[in-house]
Amino acid sequence: MSLDPTVTNPAHYRVILENEKVRVLEYTDVPGDETTPHEHPDSVMYTLNSFKRRLMSGDFQMDVELEANTVMWLPAQQHHAKNIGETPTHVLFVELKEPGADPAIAAGVVEGVFGPQ
Image (cartoon, rainbow, N blue to C red; front, side, top):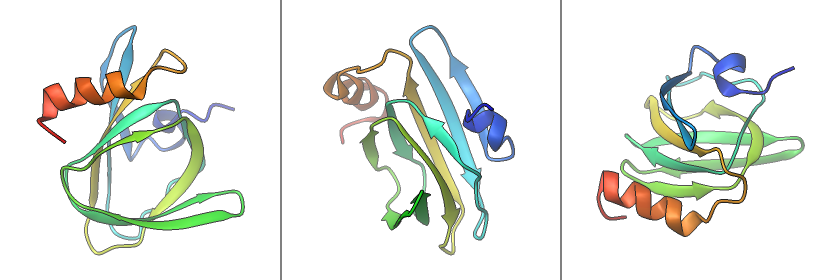
């Protein structure tokens, strides 16, 4: 079974760019929406708005609140999540296709596109 988020959660994830080096996903949801388990390779996340989410993986659970225009490095992971806030979530994920890519290089690429961190 594929854990590709565009397959497991097509109402929330869509591919907006893909080539041999990266895949860029747009993620959207509204308060109360919950995803099913899925996985991401090493990625850079850019938040387009502020939101609050509960991230879950196995017995682990963590609530996060992120501001708009936050750029974060995310190591490869499997999880599912729920929007527990009062605002929609709108995020871009730049998924790297080269395993173990240097996060400093990826952050530099995002900085060049989206402005300083």
